[in-house]
Image (cartoon, rainbow over all chains, first blue to last red; front, side):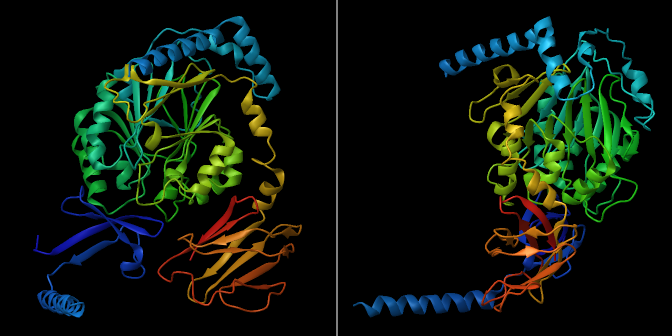
Length: 77
Length: 471
């Protein structure tokens, strides 16, 4: 299995929730709002899901929040 | 704790007395009267007949499990009880039928419930299963099959025959193949040759499959003497409609509610047709899918006594062919073995509170059931934000107080004073406008139908789900 790259079976759709089973280990089951899946997704589809760490975005968010914290700490002094 | 067990013993004694009472003349006489009142076929005498065990399990296993409808189950129940267990497997289904030393399993819950199913069967002293039925291939029904196939000798495997791409399904088929288990596909009209005294008829799937796995669920009608069970798998409104038009006798004492009592099924007309005394919902506590749906639960509660595996734990219904007893394993009572279960209720088929309940016009009014068949959601456009309601009947129907709801239940439209003429269609638009005889306006400033998929639900003025359509 590629790191961060997974195949899931769309086992079923319960109302607006899609139930996905990890193909390599189908005891791993995740619920995903149907709206997050590609349009036309249907039961029985095999989905390719990639997960990567976005280091840049993480750093940016940390910086923004830290700056905001500093600003608030100084504001009430 | 001691007090609870004291109570249990008393309940069991009462239940025992009642069951025994049915066997005496007075009980039989009472039952005969009810039976005749209800216009049912007269099988009263049959439970008096006693038959010795004459089963040959080895023979049974080597024969074909399914037969066409020329196979007629004996109308003479042996001196045996049929027990149908609805196992608590969290969010999923698993049902065990036990009769005359034989066992049949319908579904096996999610994969992590396989050991639970296996342990339950072992507790009942079961080491081989005559028939295993997979109602349909969703993981909450077949996940535990792997464990079951590896732990028990299985005589026959019966499947819906409609393929699914999951590894769970593929692995199940591979295991059946490797073990050379006789495999058959269920078809409407066939009977499962479980035991001559127990009639098990397959009502679904029919010759043509639906596109939906749920709607291809194997639906079973199990009859033992005068007591019948309808096991719906995850079948919904589409199958219910088909069954009602098929001429099958749907009337059943105990209903295993379809699809965990979601609102994809258990339509008002169908529940009226089945008219269950007891409804069993197999559902997991705090599940993510909103099962059971409040609307459906209310409908079932009006029609019957409702049992739920999330609240009651495993539920066992035992019948001698004329009366039945429901035993529930109460949640939180730390039941270690089947002896420590609580007798919830003994229900005899006699005129009682049930009859009154059935005749209560608010629970099964002739008006709502007659309109149900004529007014339905005929079209839904998620993009253009409108839904069409059509009256295909021959008389006008007042929609005043009826409601339209979306999937999220966040948006509800209540019809104003409005009458839909025969063969007429009215379009309900999301936005604002002036109502006419053919166009109604919700008056919403923003779109409310989810373009990624949504369903329009139509409820009548009593809150009964009349129709739904997926867009």
